[in-house]
Length: 345
Image (cartoon, rainbow, N blue to C red; front, side, top):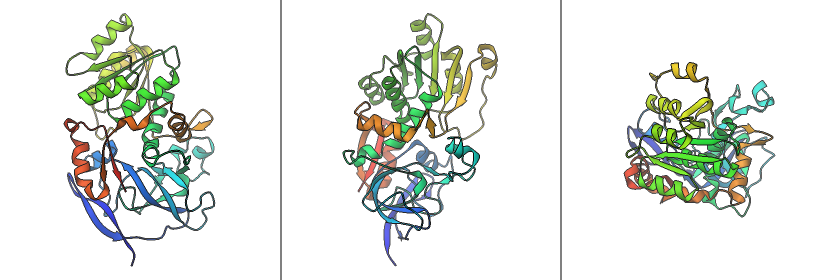
């Protein structure tokens, strides 16, 4: 039996390397030689027990690798292709897929369904969730396509243009990439709220017009001051929690747009009266799909490959897969200076 190493959750705030069986990919699936995988906020939700933990299977979806084996029926890829993966598979045939909303596919499944994801030496993924990368793109850049695509879609959901002032709540990976996507889109003015020094420094480097440390300044008062009391045209909420939803409603102007992209994992008590009074539009942003004529993944790949977004600025820590426990510890404690932690092979 062929084996490989994989990082498996073993309890709350517990993850470690195990020797597991290396299986050939099934029909429609592809095996990758994993090169780089980022620790996502959703991975931390599982780490802390907010969401379920995979049963003896490696998680990880911010992944870049090289195709090494094809399952039956896969014709769109070849061994040797450099690829990155979406976090889910889709059928391509249901009404949502046909309309371009494949992130709502009626047959949507975790991209590595019942197999090991990116926190393993070899990743198995469904061919429908794989995107080829330019040869010029590094493995590290490839592993950053997925979170950038999430953020790019959130900006798209806001319909933000060069006329709009955009606020982003949260200085983590999704917040920083939302800032970068907004800057690349040429919006009129950007504001981001942060909690840690490394987040503030990165936001300035990415071109934020206003960086508000929530420990020092009231974001709502700051927004009132810079907008003459009007509020921001769009607010992207990337953190979660009722207080952040209410903060978004405080910052957005009447008839503006609030986009929720955070991982909300429990029911919340929030002031919905603000929506009635302001007539603000509140919408979600679910992973990625099509924004306009191109997929969000294609847009993210182009933003990185063209240099319009220097994605690697977000990577603060790089560790080998064998040090996965330390990687999660660092990622879970932002006092470590972490923004994006990568596990590399």
